[in-house]
Length: 262
Length: 90
Figure 1 (cartoon, rainbow over the protein chains, first blue to last red):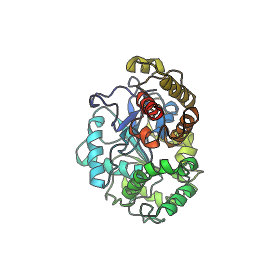
Figure 2: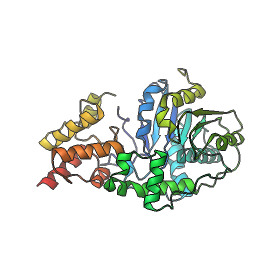
Figure 3: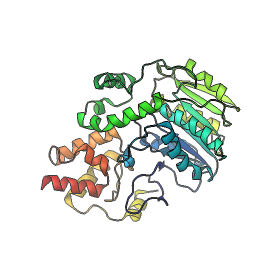
Figure 4: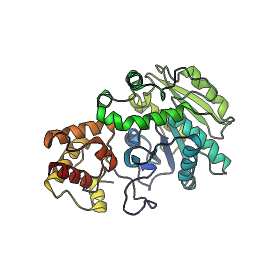
């Protein structure tokens, strides 16, 4: 499956799009924009399309510094990240109902964008799914990773099961990927959450074995929506979205309220 | 969309021996039948783990270091990768 041609792609390059669209357009009524974790690309969301109802279109958000945007520098500040993502998403909000899913760093980006889009008077998401991310105002339980030295960072990544062991073992590949990962971690770890509530319902997802963003640090998300709040947990660690993909998607689709939702 | 569509959109199937060899590796890695020279490793579903597998198969098929990770990440289109391998082998 290939994303449809991009109208805005600069001539001569097939690279640089912030969107990886995994659906055709025909049957789609609700777009699900998926924001990745630190260091993550869009491909973790590729398999989601076949697990959601046909009226849901899965689109991965491709951050600079990875995949076809490898040559672009990763975001190095929140204003930069939110400015660029707002610009990319503003036209998308006019195409119809949509929802945000974000995991860890992605949840923070999605939450901040929901505030930003509302402030700009744009159509809000139908649902905000925050996954593996402590609520605004809750102090972090674990020390920051973006300042760790190489061996400490690698050990922590191995414990978290966030980077495949084969990739961690490849010096050449880690040399390429680590700067992007660190930049993303820095963004996640310097998050200063916007206060207040968003208009969209919030669904919080957490891993029962997640020592970084456990259940008790996520229930306070209920104070950040003026609509409904729900929380679900899954029997896995911080990266439960990969281990529990089917259950995670069932939880999301159950809240999306689309025609074909289970 | 089927892979036929992608070929119709992007045209050219693999022509050179190097392109065909890379296409064959991609068919195995991604479980697809049709690969065009304009196809991009990351658009077909490549990630860091598949990158490791791909680079190691290129190494088995050609030689050590004919394709470096940075070359793959800089421009992951099949035609560009084949060109890089040919230049390294020349």
